[in-house]
Image (cartoon, rainbow, N blue to C red):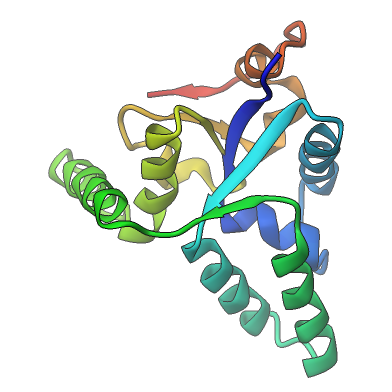
Length: 168
């Protein structure tokens, strides 16, 4: 069976590279375990690397630790998608539609992950679902429910264990 695709955003990736002041680490680790066991493929848009770098900068890490964390970002066994013109247009359309529908805080950055999920027919897993969950046409799973999500279980072929997802 072909592994299911999961898009992760920078709120998940940062947990893999620096655990300081982070929550839902067990669920983030479960994603990597599922990847390593071949249950899922993890993908992300290239903007995630910039966002993770910015997050590390905000943590005020000492330079050696920050550089080690960035090295880990580039060595993770995930597929990073470049932003093509087609993906940029879809990202803009999704952000624009969300704003038009009254969700003023949805950013182009938020929509980049949702657009990749839509393009690749993947589930988006995020530790910050408040904005992406408002974008229509994308299945969003909060990281905190990753181990209990019936939607994720469906994509990786496991029986549902309960929990909630945001279906849009």
